[in-house]
Every structure is written in structure tokens, then in C-alpha cells.
Image 1 (tube, rainbow, N blue to C red):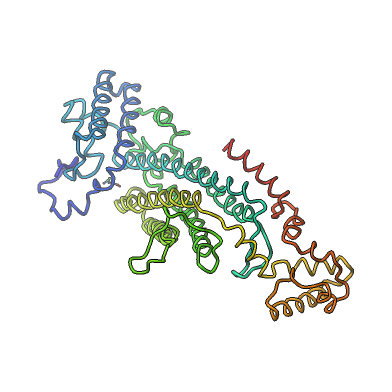
Image 2: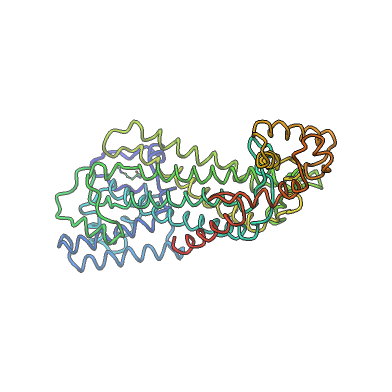
Length: 459
Ligand code: ARG
């Protein structure tokens, strides 16, 4: 057991207590951030003449040596240490002796851990963002290829009106684009440096907190030392953003699963992203989509967990806050893994254009357009609705589509129908006449796609 705070104690910590209290098994994940923060801290201490330039020099060399040795495998982070902060400090003292004991001048583990977690999260936000961008790229490429791939649009999972695959993918493009802007907001709001908050009440040393913040790429220091050590809002916001990303991925997964089913056959998931059954030789299962849908629960769980952990904590630091780590790490790894796999699956998925179009035709998705045709020929909408209802009943009885009825059959139900009805209810007309911003026509989609292309360049 290696503890930083043994001086006041007369007995060894009980082993079970030690294990319960220790965080090294998970906070070793941010050894790099811990060392980065310490380097900035001693650089600032030397600038303020709290340490000498020589001391700064040896401490930084020692810290860089620890980082290099951890990375090349010669130094193992073991649970002999209580947490990553103790590990780094103890190893530093082993390496460079006396100057190492000055590293923690004007600092507490409370502001140190607040900093490390922020640095770690800030890096991870950028990684999640770049995975989202890769997903947007695949979506946009799919949109470009499929502005004339017709499919049914659904409400209540019932065929409603025809749309295109580009339009459907475009809805997801909007969702994941919003997810990126949420991450950007969080990044902006969280980007203040807690180091220098001390245990809770700042320090008596003449620290230059602005300088430390600048060295670490923050917009400035946090403005209240109690909040500085005990703010975990940014983690809750990040978890909430990841929960939303997962919710979007899960909805999309649900659609892929439906589309890939034997009944739909709108898509075929690539063999590389499917799995088989141990008993049923014919099976090709959409396990990746199902797992993404399933793992959404883990990320929601992490959000609920941290909200609950934080809700009863008085100011300032309390050990409860150590519980901010494992769930957040798990949520980040889960979200990143799901984004990467989902993107790969989407990129290799084949779209069955013929099935999609046939499905749109068989489901009376052009019934609204048939009613609109009558309206354009002077029939009141409510009457037109009734007439088309009769047409639909007739077709169901005969097991045909509206497009398959003869003109005589049309006229038998309403004399208003003429030869141009076929053109008016064709899939192409149904889609192409929906030209308003955000609608599925090729013209409207091409405009949106051009905007998205610009977005991909600047954001
Ligand atoms: N492992 C601790 C955490 O993650 C570090 C801070 C410890 N501070 C303290 N006062 N015990 O929160």
C-alpha cells in the first residue's frame, strides 16, 4: 500500500478499506492527462518563483520519463498505489529524489482529479465528434446516390407516402449533425481550468492560474474554487449527449433490423457485419444492429447513475465523486465502439431498390396524390378522400395497386378521372411534386445535399 497521506495515521489501513477506497484500477486510464497537468503546474510554479528553474527542469524530465516508460511497457501501473496521482508522484520521487517532493506544492488531489477528468473528457469529446463526422460522410454519400430510390415513408410503421432513400437518410443526417453541435456546446462550456482551486479554498501561493489554463489549452481558469473541485456538470452533459447519440443509433438500428428482415428485404447487411446461427444454417442475423440497440441501455444507465450520485453531495469535494469515472469511461468506450461499427455496417450495406419501390407501390402510398388529383379537378377534398377510399377498397379486393386499375374501373367510381391519373400518381410524380424545403423531391434534396457538403467542409 502506497499512500500520500500516512503522516497523521498510526495504523495501516485495513486491506478491504484500502481496496474499497482505491481508484487506480480505473483512473490509470488518464495517466497521460495527469502527467500533462503536472507539467503545466510545475511550469507555472517556476514562472512564479515558487520552484527554481532547475527544479522545474528535473521534475519535467522525470515526468516525461514516467510517461515514456509507461508507454514502452517498462513501468507498469499496479494497484500498489491508491490512485494514478499517487502512482505518478511516488514514481517521480523514486526517480529524481528531493525535487519530486515539491510537485504537489499549491495543489490538492481535488483540483488535480478535476483537471485530469476534464482533460480526458475534452479529448474524448473530439474523438466522438470525429466518429460522428465519419458517419455523416457515409450518410451523405448514400444520399447522393439515392435521390431517386423510391421507398415507402411510414407513420405508425404503416406505409404512408412515398419518399426516397436519400430523404430517409437525410433525417438521420440532421440528428447526427445536432449531436455534433451538442458536443461543441459542451466543449465550449466546460473549457475552464480547475487547477489552482486547491482542496476547496484556493491556495496561499501566488499561483498564476491564467497561465496554467493557457498552457493546457483552456479558455481561462474556473472562477470559484469550491465549484472548481466539485463541478461534474460537464460529465452529465456529455453523458446526456452520448445517450442521445445512442438513442439515434438505436432507432436507426431498429430500422436496419426491420429492413433486413425476410419480409422487407429492403437491405442486405454485408456478410462481414452479420452473424450466423449455431443451429439454423439459413440464418444471417443483424447482430451488430441489435447490439448497438441493446448497448443504448448502458449509456442511459451511466447518465442516471451520475445524476443520482451527484444529487446529494454538499460542497465541495466528497469521495462520492470518484464514482464519476467508471460509468463515464464505459459510456465513452461504448458510444465510440457503436459509432465505428454502425458506420462500417452502413457503408457496406446493399440497398435493394426494386423491393423498396415495389413496397411503396403496394402500400397505396400514392392515395393522397390520387385525392389531390380529384381536388385539382374541382372535387372538394373531403369528397375526394371518400372516393379514393372506395378505390383502395376495390384494389384490396382485387389485390392490385392504384396504378394497375384500368381507366374504366376508375371512371366507374368517379367520372372525373382521365388518362392523366397514371402520371399524377406515379412514384416519380408523387415525390417530385414535393418540392418545399425539407421535402423529398430530387430538386429539394439536391439543394439540401449541397448545403450538407458545405457543412462537411467547414465543420
Ligand atoms: N481518486 C480520487 C477521485 O477520483 C482522487 C481525489 C481524492 N481526493 C481526496 N480528497 N480523497 O475522486
